[in-house]
Length: 227
Image (cartoon, rainbow, N blue to C red; front, top):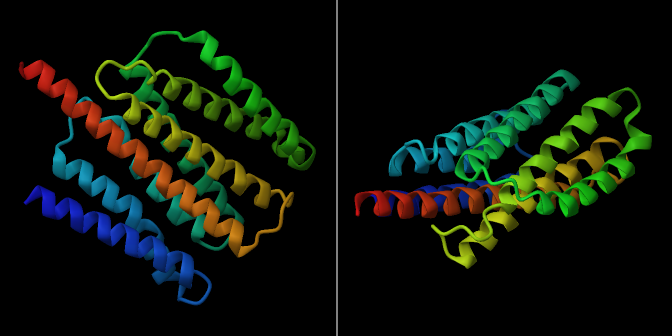
C-alpha cells in the first residue's frame, strides 16, 4: 500500500508541477496557488506516510515551511512576498539543522569554497539591494551554512556515494533556485517565463532529492539500530 501511495504522490506532484509551469499565467489565482503547493504537499505527505521520527522531523518541518513560502510568494502584494521569503528561509534553516544534527563534525575546509561562492553571489546582489543589504547578507549566510552542512554528507557511512552526491546536488539546486529568484526580484535579470520555470524546476527537484536521500539514510540507520 505504501509503495502505491508513494507512486501516486509522485505522479500528483509531477503533474501539478508541469501544470503550474504551463498554466501559471492563465489560470485563476486560487488554482495557481493550489498547483504550486501540491508538489511540496506531496513530499510532506510522503514523509508522514513512511513514518516521522527523529531522523526526518526537521526535513518535514522544512518542507512545510517551503510549502507555505511557495503559497505566500504567489499571492499578490509585497507583504505576502516578503512573508514568503521569510517562511522559505525558515525552511532552509530547518534543512540546515537536519544536516547539523546528522553530522556535527566541523569539516571547516568545506566551508571555504561554499563561502567563496556565496560571497560572490552577495557581491553581485549588493549594488541592487539598497536598504535590504543586511537582510540579504543574512540570507546568503544562511545558505552558506546550509551548503556547508550538506557537504558533510560526503563520506557518510550510512548512505552510498551516489546518494551523497544526489543529496548535495539537491541542496545546490535549492540554493541556485533562490539566487535566481533574487536576480529577478532585484531586477538584475528580467522576470521572464524561462527564468520562472527554471527557478521552479531547480526548487522542486532540489527538495525532492533532499527528501529522498534523507529517507535512504533514515532507513539505513533504523536497520543498523534494529540489527
